[in-house]
Image: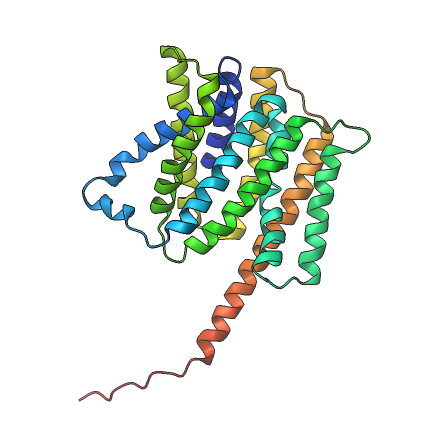
Length: 293
């Protein structure tokens, strides 16, 4: 989980570096096509089974929302300090919770409601309406969080039948042409040095995704989520050391409030699911054992 956070922060730093010479949509295109190339070794031989799916509709919707989210994020990184980008991106799970309540009919309890209110209050602490200008970059990062939250809902639905590799594969297959078409009006062929940066960006993004997925297979949610907050520290350090960005204290306070609320909601939902599973297991009739001969 720590490695995933560092990799995502470094990738965001490289995106900001590349945005100085290339349009964000072109940078997004190279992130996708090179990511697809890096996944290729997992798709040969037995890996061909990852192409099989009966859920093409949801996979297409996930790809579309992920494309919008990625392009908003890549453009927003150009306009907003890295620490603020990271802090506002923590809003994704909060938006996903609200959408799940509205669309999927999930029950909402008083503690969950209070946690949601606290999380959105954290966003207000960062944005400080009336004291801090609401810019295009801020709108893009929030838009990225909203569209990513919709993708998270679709991922939650797809996880019941589709593997993580299948979902990643089809998402990249959709993202590549979408971002490629969006990049065409701004195309500037990268030189060898820029291409190396783009390859490193794609490698970090792919590694972060695999590490994030692997972390949840190895440890409990409660042990992992606090470590994800380290992304805000890494992003602030990278922004300060390499791009002379100095985030104010409100970014850290607001980011901590948002992260605390999302962590609480996630832990509480995991606890409720565990309790429900135990109750279902206890309610099942015991299977009679055959007597030994």
